[in-house]
Length: 522
Ligand code: B12
Image (cartoon, rainbow, N blue to C red; front, side, top):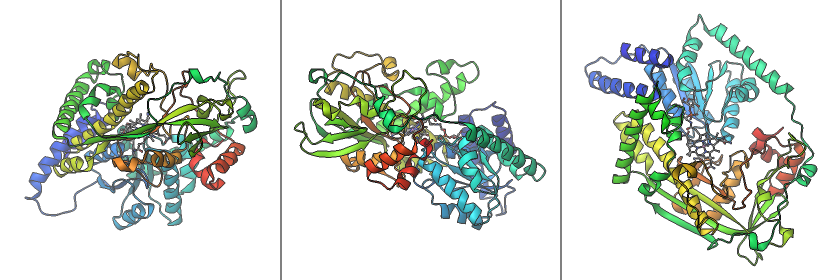
């Protein structure tokens, strides 16, 4: 335990990296499991009890698991409730187990709303425990503006695992607790004030539509895919995906910032990076060889036209039968008088042009079978490899999306002559884009429901949670746009007028649309 305290201290001082902490924890757990049988059962002298959970509807847990290990190393007892945990279970466990702190994690924006609900319920049930907020979409500002005001107890945003031990130690130390809580509340009040003062200058939605970018649409200029409808790839060989892996993001998952391959020679943590890289590649080879995880996907092309800010998909080129409409949002924030206000619908020929255009769609996963692989590592108390295999599956899912996009460009014709290096591919130096619902150009996750129906993604083992997160966790989905000028952008804040129009187009009560779009509302 003293050794682990030293590991915790070195990590908090930035002298160890996450992977080294996990490896140390693994050594400690092996020793403890050997020693346990010689020991009397007694309460360990844990410094406090922390409940961790990824909130309802959310399945991502790499970050939360890292936090759990770091807290464990710092001698806190961690009760990890896993993923998709309902509010009631989190709070009831906190009561039953006499927890000292509750920690919530989430990857996508709908989880932010769920976190605010947990805070509200903690207030209603008269909790006083500190609440920790973490995960990729959370922020100091969101925590201050939307979560902390719901709860009278201390609510702390924790940006990454290296801060968590210090935060928890201050919250549980009677001598420091009050001062820490006060400073935290003060910072949050400042953030709320800054947020209140920030004004978003929006043009009326009607005017925003009039400022759309215009393109010359002519039928000969439209690329025609070699088939329409859906095709599935039931078993994508993992080995074929390896060349498409963007290793830079592999290191992001391990909290090592820097571009690959330069990161391997980083003066401070190059050696650790090489160690993780070698271990990751060995585990990847093992997964490929023994097929411990599998990848599958589905994609297709459909004749399509824009109807206002909707993209209408047709069964075939006769355009007699409409299959579905993706409802898109349009920028309303005027940053520059000369710049058009964009919507993804602009990249598809408008219905009034008379031109038949096309759109593509895809959903891929590399996480089939991963639960079993993770379970085996967890049984061996091997947190490092349990996290490593998930990080690799995430990389393979992204690689699959990149690889499939290259195939799609060939099948769409315009990419047939494309000769790009691996680096140029990852830098996306090709024609066309593949925005994903949830990304800034199309922030409404709920459109994934239509996408999954269109692709029949369930047939390759993919599904959506109630907040439209995909399972398995290592999954990516989105749309393909072929227009040469198609580019990524941020919709930014939208006004009440657009919200109401959007809800009407979606056939959804405004209140519900408001919930899905809440992070985008001005
Ligand atoms: C890699 C990545 C993925 C990977 C896996 C994610 C992962 N492993 O976390 C894959 C490819 C699978 C993926 C998929 C998607 N992603 Co993604 N992804 C990212 C990316 C680029 C990095 C995330 C990451 O790996 N971080 C490293 C890990 C270790 O950090 P972490 O989870 O945040 O955890 C740390 C801290 O947050 C904190 N922490 C976490 N939990 C807790 C809990 C407590 C109590 C505490 C104290 C601290 C704490 O400590 C952790 C360790 O330091 C981010 C962008 C970004 N830069 O953040 C987008 C991002 C998170 N993704 C996003 C989206 C939209 C998606 C998709 C919906 C896209 C799609 N339609 O296909 C899917 C959803 C997947 C699904 N199953 O439904 C959005 C989410 C925003 C939103 N609008 O919802 C982001 C922010 C990108 C963006 N700018 O739009 N993604």
